Structures are given as structure tokens and as C-alpha cells.
Length: 133
Image 1: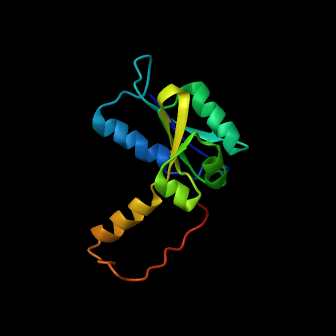
Image 2: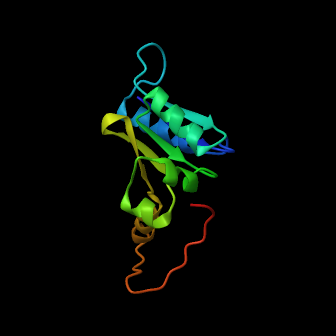
């Protein structure tokens, strides 16, 4: 299983460390000829290049960071509703027939974090400050 993160720059991403720990916790082998999982950093020139590599390697999933989120939303074969609404993709996944689906997990991630802190935002105006997609 090949997973990864793509961006420009991408060396700052903590995703490889997070996924290595998840692989360890789930018992997936990541080294040697019997490796079951790997997580790659991909420095690419464009979202089109990222999608081409994703397909060519038969990747099972990829996180996207800047500057590819908005461009990827225009290139994937399918868009989940939240990605369509935001006009940005931060996750790629394969779907039937070699097609690629784009999703954006930021809204659910932000809401989960707020709820976990015990904060009820129902009926309140909120501002989330970030950069990009």
C-alpha cells in the first residue's frame, strides 16, 4: 500500500511521521521485502503531475498541501460535496476504473477539534483563519 503527501514545499509536512506511527500501531510492516505500507513525500510542479504519479503508482491515498488544493479540485474525476463547496481538495483516493476522487477533510477536522474541546458552536458565528484551500 502506497500513501503520500504532495506539495511545494513538502519537507515541512508532519504526515510521514504521523503515518509511520499509525503503521506501527496497526502492525503494518514498513521496511524490507515484506513491507506492507509506505508513505512518500512528493515534491511536484503541479496538481496534474501529482495526479499522474498517483495513478501511475497505484497509490491508495494522498494528502495534498499548498499549492495544489484548488487546482486538484478541477482535475479529479469525482468531488465529494465538501470539496466542491470549498473548491479545494486535500485528499485523493482511487475509485472504480482508475478514477480519482477528491475530498476535503478540513471542515470535519475543525469541527471535531472544537467539539473535543467541549465548545458548542451551534447557532454561533465563527471564523476559522488559515491559508489556502
